[in-house]
Image (cartoon, rainbow, N blue to C red; front, side, top):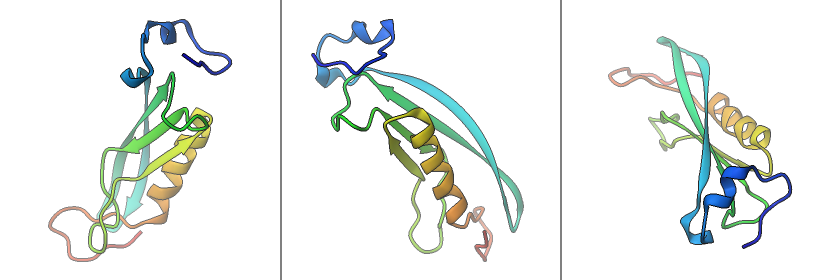
Length: 107
């Protein structure tokens, strides 16, 4: 097994890289939209041995954005928790959010 520098003790619990053991971090960010304010909960996984060696952190929001055109859940990858979290938040801010039952999507 190959581990990156600074691995925490919990990483040694993984016995094979295909287990994809990850520590989970939770964050919350609010976004203003036409209907008021919406809270996005972001989950960041910190992998012991990621499939892509330079991407130890993966962040994903709990809600979709851009619902009227091409809906998707914002994500972010990075070498650090900050990189992944910041990329996910940029994606949340870049695309409009529309609550179910509304007719216009504005950021």
